Image (cartoon, rainbow, N blue to C red; front, side, top):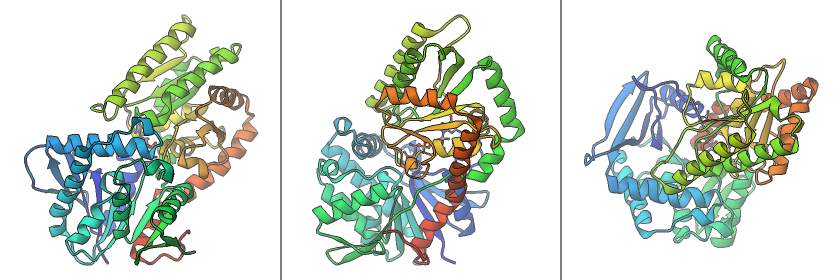
Length: 460
Ligand code: GDG
């Protein structure tokens, strides 16, 4: 059996001092354990050391390497998070185009290729993850690697008209053709990629998803990521989750909980969510004291200015809304800037009558799927979901809204609060069916089978 090699910016293999892993980490860890693989990536540390450090824990080996401060500034904070992330999430006005960023991105990708290549075997299956490492496959080919190499993009692929604003976009897209398989979250992203290839590269797609450009062929697929549905369902029904649920219900004093859980990121539409919730408080004044919003938002990428700006704006908005509407025994928004253990999160989701997931753009959005998985089948809550999350293409029985419209968010909250239990159950049964069927193990199998060339079904 060929080994599986996973390469991503950060490694979330199990570790001695690590807490519970997220669904993606669990799925990749299981695959690595089965296939005796290695997970490579950045350690998250800066130093002058250029050596990979290997550890094996719980049957999984990881190999991590430090970067220099300049690397982090240019590759991670710079090109990955100030250029590609905003551009690929349609925030052209936030995207910064700096030669130094691009230089740092290429340098770090080359460095990863140089340090990892000596540890690869000729029959390894190599799976590269996300926008930090787009050129890595091409750079491994420069080392003479003829392995099957796949790439999965966790974020959206933007429309051609946006992508062409990236200086040297041709070079970046061209490097994808070094892979055997390129996976996107949704058919919409795959269609945008196809449009780029056909209009900018004179490439062609066949009915099996094979893409040919200038004599090179690879396979492009839509392969939506899922959650660890069954373990998460069990976690939501566990004793630990029940204790949290009771705490939440007690703290809510009989009011219905609306929950949001997001990394603090402008793509998640948190300002728009607060504005939509405020619109609900204004427009449905007679019902407003029946609910409260708990927004969990652990800070992320705090060295990037746009992330500090969004945090300041949300602090101000939540303070203003609470100042305006709160009463002696009611705070409309509980805004929490810290993360919680997964089992606690599962209990909080289950306690919530509404899951409010309103990204302005999202590759998939796993919170939407986790919220569904955590519900009590006898009395499930309602998912309100942005049309612009990849998850909306599968979770069509949610209340789908335009996150830019405060009125749509307000009306959806009202509709969810009024929704009879029978309809909540009907919608939830269809949602959970998809969440369980297309879970994270399904996603992992589908991608690795396409990569190994053993799949029978590849979407065009
Ligand atoms: C990228 C893409 C795509 C959040 N707060 C806590 C916590 N979380 C966990 C959630 C969820 C994960 O973080 C967030 O996943 P999302 O999918 O919502 O968003 P991104 O971080 O932006 O992920 C996204 C994903 O990659 C996978 O391909 O879906 O579109 O942007 O699992 O539960 N976990 C814990 N405590 C918290 O407070 N334990």
